[in-house]
Image 1: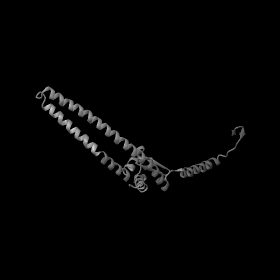
Image 2 (image 1 turned 180 degrees about the vertical axis):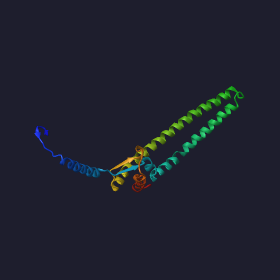
Image 3 (image 1 turned 120 degrees about the vertical axis):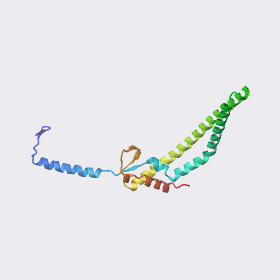
Amino acid sequence: MHIFGKEFSVSMSRVPRLCIVASLFLAVAAAQAQSKVAIINLQKALLDTAEMKKAQADMEARYKPRQDGIDKLQRELAELQRNLQSNAGKLQPAAEQEMVSRGQRAQIELKRQTEDLQADVERDRNDILQRGGQRIQEVIKKVAESQGLDIVVDSGNTLYFKPTLDVTPAVTTEYDKTYPVK
């Protein structure tokens, strides 16, 4: 056989032995290269932490008075609309116009308060989730290193996994130990 201008001779009896040796070598290399994988439900791991539960409760308490004010304004607006409909044609034009104007002002105020509340809640929520997201990444790395994991994959990106691969509870527990609620 000529390879690159030189003659090489390979005995046919050596070919099967070489194939077997090469196969064994590849099998050993593949076994050594297997990675230890874990799955995490990142959203659940973060939202189940004591810190996130406390932050949720704090936000609800902080914004409850504003939400109650919006609810009250909605009830007043609904009552004003009911009065306007039930008294249609019975009111003086000036009184009817006054009710319509009050309703329009109430709608504008309701919209402003709702948008302001939504913006404030969204800002606070994003700040909390950003801080928690950074922290949970550190905790995942810590858990992965302590368990000898090579890869941790979010469950949202997997079609199937064995429940034994799930490290979500371990990460949540470690997060609570690392970042206790104050």
